Length: 132
Image (cartoon, rainbow, N blue to C red; front, side):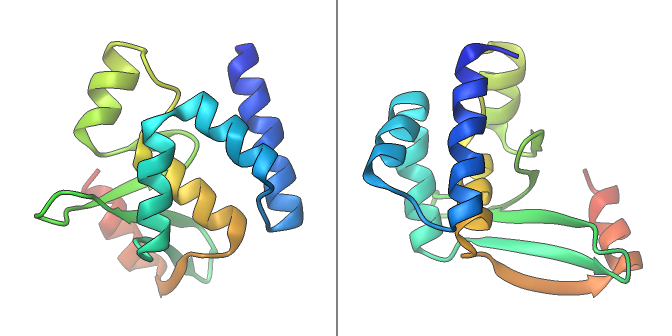
């Protein structure tokens, strides 16, 4: 794990435990993620993050609205995967970013309790995941 990733994880854990963000934490996240963090905060402010949870298992995935006029929705796991083009191009192929704005928005919304919670059956969740 890189030192940048370790710093980011420490900040996220602190935000998650307090359910709030300090100015210092905002500064660190902005430094680490730049424009992607700014875009992620806009998505969260516009209530663009849904946590879709299967019942009875409790397993979940995030559905995050994009910023384009099409308002596409991307399925993502905040720490590991996003179905957007940027994730594959900037993160997987080029290794230029730690994560995309959708992953950041999901992580930020989850940390602050700002997700729209959607409950579905485990079967419905499995169908959604099968589209990945």
